[in-house]
Length: 499
Ligand code: HEC
Ligand code: HEC
Ligand code: HEC
Ligand code: HEC
Ligand code: HEC
Ligand code: HEC
Image (tube, rainbow, N blue to C red):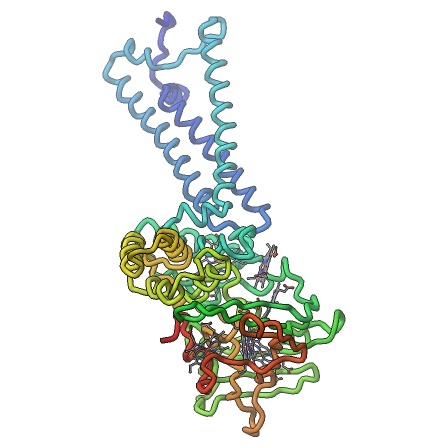
């Protein structure tokens, strides 16, 4: 117990001495650490290569909250101390007032302990803040912490060519405007996540929030001349034998920069000298009735569909960019048809199991409210279809796996919500413009590149011996349902098997 006399509680120095209590001192350490953490986070944020949407929450909400808590502790300590002194129990108060006398070993030890402890705490705060920053940067934070709302995007992303690219590399654009927008959007997301009132399915708040072309170009050199790209599409019919039907073709991807090769083919839309602009009348940009091309010589050509007579000044005109074709570079939800074709092609579903294609697609497309319900009903449906079949367990497992990767009943997300625009079989895609129905002013010419060999050449098709007949000049497409090819492909092919 201290033997020194307690100074009278008068004057400013004395009032400050009321801060000499453990509560106030701990508050100070907390406040200083929080301030330190704030400065550190602020600096990291300032010098980071791209804005992190959740950083704002750490730097401007969490750190200041700790700062305030620390200051509050200082104040409470002060008030408690003030209350104690006028009650006239100086002895009691003295237990709490700090008297540091450096000549005493115990005090020296206490002081060293306190200063050492505080420095340690400060260090841990810095380390903790920096670690937390790293966690918010990580893909699992974007995809998993925010589990329900982002699950579809995260799952699909893990199967995409971009599975090794950070979410923030695409979703946080360069520049100061994006920086601020990202901060606000991070706060808004957190708010909706806590309130649970996010939309199902999650939508980009505004279509202009999708990644900018410059973002893709930070990795992809779009002047590259790709030329021809060989692709194989393996399908299976919805018949008893799951008859294979394969299309092998060469996609004329071409290039967009005359310096590196001829401007031609599919990537010619991205030509440095050409410009393709369009109007979409719906948010999903499925309906494009008006297109304008400005070529290298500044010649402007406008194309319209016959029934579109509106004044274009009512609409926003957009310049075509990568995402108008590659709209699902990293969150692609396979159609049930395509997913089952893939499993059959890779041998994950036994192709000799009668009607497997038709039955599995049928099991996938039923309306289910939750994943658990889907798993249970897929199992009971398939068991009912194949009562004496040993392979049914593997079939059930694979069907459930397809469902898990491509269907998100809780978020109401599947291929129908986010159609892929890259082709024209299951969604309008390229045919939004290349359907031969967009006519120039003279009403005679339509957009170039609308015949079957403009974008690709079918090299071979069919199955077995047929598939060995190869023609590099391009074959006419032999459709299964050949009498019936008048409508556009996507009007029959909706992603499910055709009845
Ligand atoms: C290769 C670039 C890229 C990467 C990497 C990427 N995204 Fe996306 N993301 C996109 C594009 C493009 C869109 C859709 C734009 C459109 O439809 O117009 C999108 C859309 C979204 C949407 C809106 C809903 C939707 O499906 O259209 C969410 C949510 C989303 N992404 C979350 C994520 C998360 C979480 C990650 C990381 C696990 C991630 N993204 C990684 C490019 C990317
Ligand atoms: C951070 C770098 C990065 C960014 C940003 C990026 N990509 Fe990629 N992209 C990659 C990588 C890496 C691959 C995979 C290469 C491979 O096959 O291993 C890839 C592959 C692709 C492919 C080929 C897909 C396939 O199935 O083989 C396309 C198309 C593509 N990206 C389009 C885009 C688009 C559109 C954007 C903008 C929304 C974009 N990328 C943004 C790095 C990036
Ligand atoms: C008119 C539609 C369209 C536009 C616009 C477009 N692409 Fe493509 N791109 C395609 C098609 C079709 C393919 C063929 C690949 C396929 O079918 O998977 C392709 C292929 C690619 C590939 C793969 C090439 C390879 O060598 O494997 C990359 C990477 C790519 N595009 C990036 C981009 C980027 C970046 C942009 C924007 C600057 C862009 N594309 C704009 C339609 C387009
Ligand atoms: C927004 C409308 C639009 C969409 C969507 C679109 N295109 Fe185009 N495309 C054009 C316009 C306009 C031209 C220039 C044609 C002209 O000058 O008449 C063009 C030109 C082309 C050409 C060059 C044709 C030639 O002979 O010079 C090819 C190949 C092509 N597009 C392929 C595609 C593919 C593949 C897709 C889908 C992945 C696609 N386009 C999607 C509007 C579009
Ligand atoms: C504007 C360009 C364009 C035109 C015109 C076009 N296609 Fe395609 N087609 C594509 C692209 C791009 C893909 C590849 C889609 C992908 O990789 O997902 C494709 C894919 C295909 C496939 C393979 C699809 C699959 O899943 O098996 C067939 C078959 C096909 N086209 C037939 C035709 C026929 C028949 C015509 C004429 C009526 C035609 N295409 C006209 C761009 C075009
Ligand atoms: C009138 C309706 C209709 C139109 C239009 C149509 N198809 Fe089909 N398609 C069918 C039917 C029916 C089958 C047989 C489905 C089965 O047994 O799984 C089929 C089968 C196919 C298959 C093989 C199996 C599969 O499910 O993928 C391909 C590939 C295909 N069509 C591509 C196309 C392309 C490309 C176009 C446009 C050029 C097109 N179809 C237009 C009705 C149509």
